[in-house]
Length: 532
Image 1 (tube, rainbow, N blue to C red):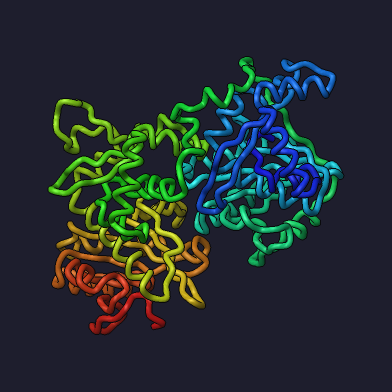
Image 2 (cartoon, rainbow, N blue to C red):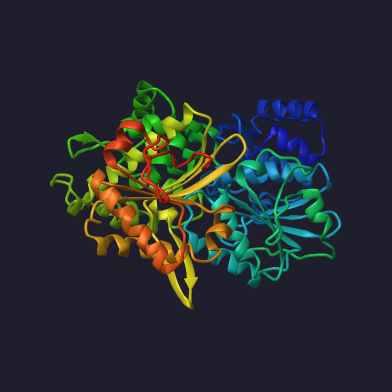
């Protein structure tokens, strides 16, 4: 288990923390282990350890075997180290979950996977086996669904533990897991990284109540199996720490600080974001944002060109590749969709000259992109000053929902999805920023997908509460006209949508949480997130 920290090592080894600290210090003094720093938003700064080439030789000597045999049987080679370093943020979460399991079941056996659908597997002392499957923040929904589907073709695990980045994708994964022949339990990554086995954070594919991991695994019986991947052909001994001073891509998860990782995640969600909007989303000073983006530019992970009269921020191909490796997705797909690289280096930045298909569209409709970014930034800033917490804020690529309506597959493609959490409730919402809905016929066409979506139980199944639909138009007159058209369409289709309509000027002056929204049968404006 390379790259354990001392707390995790104490748990999986069954030793006291003081003994592990002394042992690590002794091994480090003899240069048998090397350390590296690591931290994420969920995991506090720590030092992670791995064997050096000298340490591997000493282990072979003590075990009565050879170094090539250890490299063949364990993930101790330089190639394995680089792979785990690329995934280090996810590796840390899985290790924390494993350490929690050791509170209840000891000793355990552990196995990493390179290309299997599971990230890792754990064998409990009684023979039951657990697959651990982590869904990264930027993982593609379709690709992750394929990973879940591939679980049925692999080893017969006793259960699978699915670790998800947010509530919406957890609900989506519950539907996927319901069709699995093996038992699945799901939890949010932020909970799995910090909880004990008694914390009630795990959910089954069906049923509303959460349970502890001890309770969940108490429902399992019988031995399971786990698979072993073919041994890699290249099995080089780990390099000396003195040779690792370079800023290679595979070391970025260790080199980046949590604030820098948060910045990269935000720019992955909202390409071409203005620095002022990034300041509001991060909740830090403009000087701090300048320092963060300057550091990321020095690492060649972020660019800051000028477009539309403003400086804008976007990820480079290196930043996209780092995210893709971290979340076990395809770097080539990420670059094809989101690359900000110029097709012609000698030509100026414009939408026709950008290689990424999705970022090209965002740059082509820059006024609309900037309006959506501004709404998201104002929402985060305003919520911070009130009693709301923006628990989730998804860009268009994650805000879409696919559903079946009267036997046909349909979708809604909003400009954003958000989840506000208050003192005693939470409110999901979709955002549609409309610039082209001018005529009544066009307005009705924009509303039609939502009428289909809200006709059944799917909104409640997707979010646990019926989400609001926020529609912002360019002018006050258009907003009033859209509201009138929407009322007629809802009455004609006999479908009620929790619809709130406003205009750009009011949103920019009073903010999304202000009393700027039209809804219902009256024409009095109020907050879309009040208790009405």
